Image 1 (cartoon, rainbow, N blue to C red):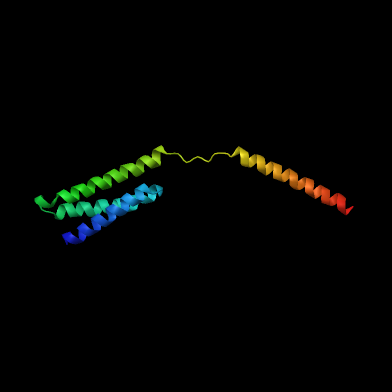
Image 2: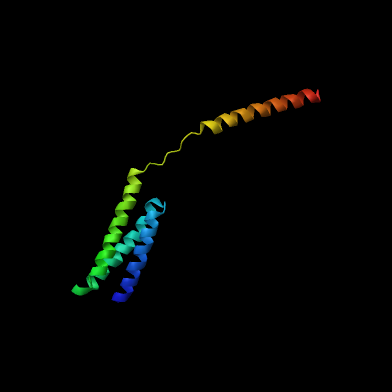
Length: 108
């Protein structure tokens, strides 16, 4: 039973670290929570001399959790106006109007 929790703890810890590095925002808390759960159960099932790896896994989970929380709270997603694009859009619209007016004059 301990080996199953060890494999699950390692697997979900690796997924949690991967999700925390990727721009997945708060979705990363799902594998972090599962990894914490499995690591805590693993820590409970382990003997005194087997508790080093579960402690390391717990530390990695907590670190990735803090990292995701920091990214969520400190980094603001802002959409910036692109003045060059807006200017080109207006110019294109004016050119299209001029072309339509020229076509109307040619038809008359």
